[in-house]
Image (cartoon, rainbow, N blue to C red; front, side, top):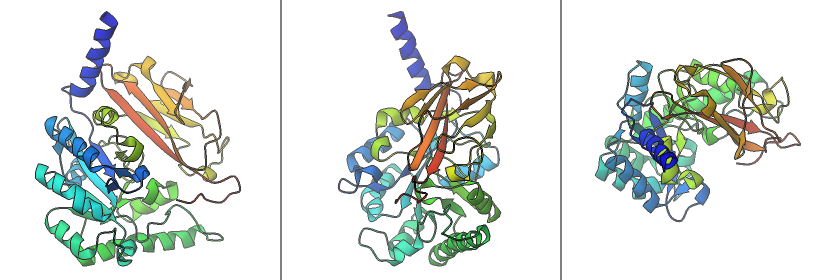
Amino acid sequence: MRVTAVILCLLFNVFYSSTSQAVAILQYHHVSDTTPTSTSISVEQFTRHMDYLKQQQFKVLPLTDIIAGLKAGKTFDQKTVAITFDDGYLNVLTNADPILKALEFPYALFVSPAAIAQNRVNMLNWEQLKTMSKSGVLILNHSMSHHHLNRQLEAETVEQWTVRITDDITQAQSEIDTQLGEQPKYLAYPYGEYNHQLLKLVNTLGFIGFGQHSGAVSPKSNFSALPRFPASGRYANLKTLKIKLQTMVMPITKITNDNPQLDQHTKGNPKRPELVMTLNLSDIYKPTIACYILGEKVEPIWINNTSFSIASNVNLPAGRSRYNCTAQSRKESGYYWFSQPWINRNNDGSWPQG
């Protein structure tokens, strides 16, 4: 009975700690019962997500307010969240927008102008986007053509890649600004893929970058690669989302070998990247640090009192994968969260589709 009481107490504190938490940004694609399940959340599930935010008195703020506040070092109230959608599907307007409007929840939509130009029946058009923008929806940059921005073409030099990707990002922003008036320079990476070269370019161009790796954000986050919690497909489970909404940013003071694109690694086995992290342990209960790779728990190897390394025991699969680490707070009984994305080629050196 005593053990059960302790567990219940910990869970209660995770959800209801009175101390300010980092901000969570939610990421959705389709809101529909008939679209691909991997990128979709049903209308019923989405309604439950939004009702939970309302019932638990989360402050749903415009993404611009959150980014400006974070950059200014602002401390947000507990339970602060932003809502975002990628790609610009019509079902965001027909299914999600009425729910969000009824609850007075602001949201942001990342779109690719080249996809809009195709006039696909399942995509929003500029007239619809103009109406949404006038109602307060943020319409933001998801690149011009929704290609893998990190990938160099065959025989393409870094200089040529830089010119091509610069044009892709800036042309998309120009088209969005022309259609809707000047919009914030926020870029959501297609497929959530980026590498160190792309982060440097995005920063040079003056954009805030958003990924699809999970985690909360704080003033100390990397504003070229801000995490968002995916909340569709296998991540639509409200039970696990409740915990994620209350997590804090892992207090990492140093990280090495963290370039997500594995073929650009020069040390160790690029199929089993070794990630080295140094933490500020002042509020971390050290024995609770836990890391997970491909669904399996992996024990950290401690280098010294504050630094550890983790690596996969098997080759990472082609495509996208992650290392996730969590740790319990000493003071708040809440949890810190960190996610490192990886992008891997096929064994023959080609890139996987999608």
